[in-house]
Length: 158
Image (cartoon, rainbow, N blue to C red; front, side, top):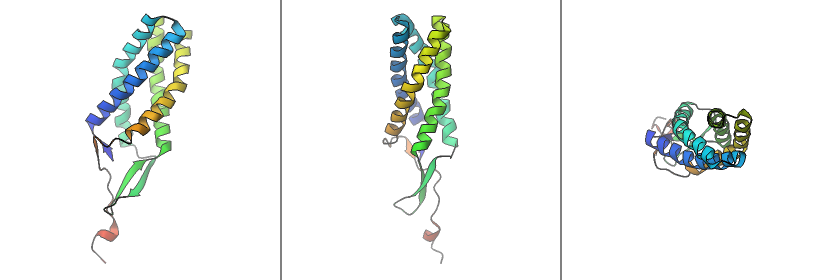
């Protein structure tokens, strides 16, 4: 299946809401300052929507971790494997953590605090992203068949 641009945008927005709440909570835990926590989460909300969209579009073009399955109509299609979701989560987390480190350091002026927030996010957000990714796989809205492979036995030639 192939995700539409609208699906990628909505999926990015839903992830950003979850991610921003996590960032705000973690930022508050390490800074004890609600102002800094909301500034960091707010700055990330803007930059990470764009970064997530780009990340999704790159992964749409990559085939590793897609498994061929036979459709009811006899054709073949690709579905994503669990390890693909895990690897997507890791690549997104690297991108997201660098963004978090940047904003946390700029807003707090403290690299140590920024590193603490970033390290905590490595753990919480990989888990949250995996759950988000698997949840979106259960939603069919905005998906269309992609990379269909015709069944050679269904061609009518003997």
